[in-house]
Image 1 (cartoon, rainbow, N blue to C red):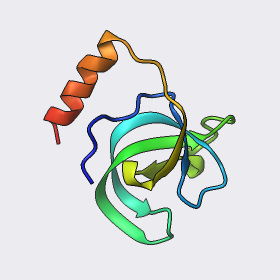
Image 2: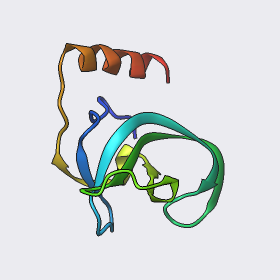
Image 3: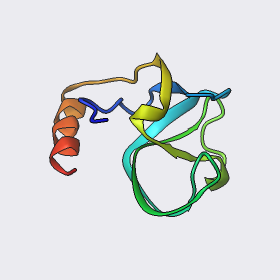
Length: 96
């Protein structure tokens, strides 16, 4: 599923079948090696977002999650946008 626009940093989302909200703090994240949300081993995969539990925020790497836009069930809050964010959105789409 192609997305038209990445959610801005600071956005709060709930993933499908999720029970804890996540705050997005990065886009287009490459996970070189790890385990996905279903417990499967993965390597060198690009994800749309990286997030941390809300409201706790970053605690350590064990509590950071990578996910795709298609994994989002609900957008609870959309982060701040301005001209810099608009320019970054263009760059994110140019560098697929």
